[in-house]
Length: 84
Image (cartoon, rainbow, N blue to C red; front, side, top):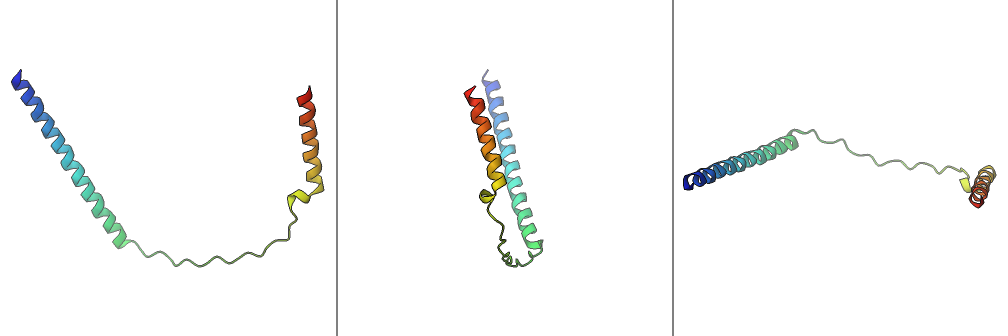
C-alpha cells in the first residue's frame, strides 16, 4: 500500500511539474510574440479632427401635428380596450 501511494505522489509531482513548465513556456512565448508585433506593426495613420456638421433646421418631431394626431388616436384606442 505504501508503494502505491509513493507512485501516486510521484505521478502527481511529475504531472504538476509538466503543467508548470508548459504554462511558463506559454507565457514566455506570448510575451515574445507581443513584443514582436509591437515592434513590426506599422505606425497608425494620424487622426484628423472631425469637421463639425452644420446644424439642420429640422423641426422637432413633437411639433408635427400629424404625429400628435396618430399618437392621440393610439392612446385613445388603448384606453378604450382597457375599459372592456
